[in-house]
Amino acid sequence: EEYNNSGNDSEEDSDKEPPEVSIQEAYNALKTWLSFFKQQRSSDFDMKDTKILKKYSKIMSKMLLDSKKQ
Image (cartoon, rainbow, N blue to C red; front, top):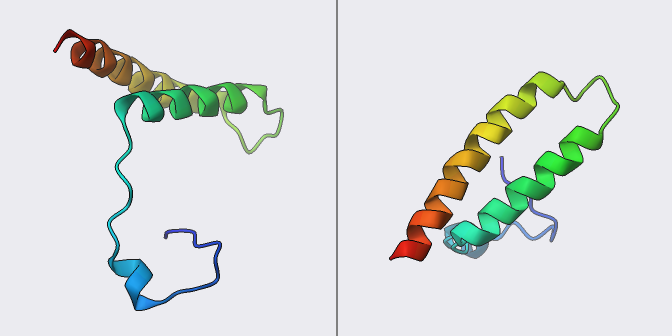
């Protein structure tokens, strides 16, 4: 479910397309999330889950490299 902080659940808002996110922005956000995740000491954060985050980080890194070649 999408989080809406504005408290305004108008139909007009739900019809809008989400803003496009560049590969670079997504990659940076994922790297930030991975760093945050690794810093957590709570048992709610299972370090085995970093494997999936690292998987997508590698995929996105390749996408970034490919996009710069074009």
